[in-house]
Length: 113
Length: 112
Image (cartoon, rainbow over all chains, first blue to last red; front, top):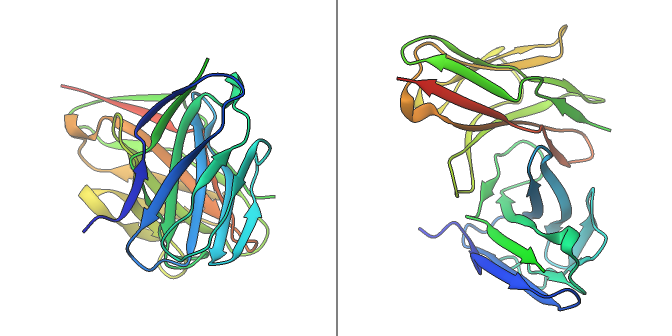
């Protein structure tokens, strides 16, 4: 019963490098989303998807890309890492986008130096 | 746009005493409200939600929350706090645009 799986758990990048954070869920959820968590700021929505082939921007999308080729996977790409992207990233999924609870992954702690 | 306010950064409570974590919201249309808990180095876990119906909602681990439409509040409560309830608590609201907005979180410290 895996739920939402994020990899890697920790990552250190140099400024300008690119990388992809992986997220997979095995609950056949249509809705998936990416958040970043920063001290004192709660969770902020980066991008979300209401189903395969459909993505949209959240509150803080700049510097990030997403794609949703399958129901299960929702990777987050950092195009050119900046120190301001140092954060903890969480992927979440839910059965629908409105009134069902979200399930969260364990998070990826990213440091950009 | 929807928003959530959690006015207190930290809530300290003695073990066995009632615990209250405050949340107020602003949203156009009907509110869909959620509470989540985060333990250190873990993802968020769902506690309870209000969609419609009874204003008092019961959730996991003995927590409950009261929806108050006139005060636009959704405070989380537990009658008797445990040391293991020490964690970060988030209130969240989803509006008709289907985007989930989180508050800044409240650190709860239960003192033995």
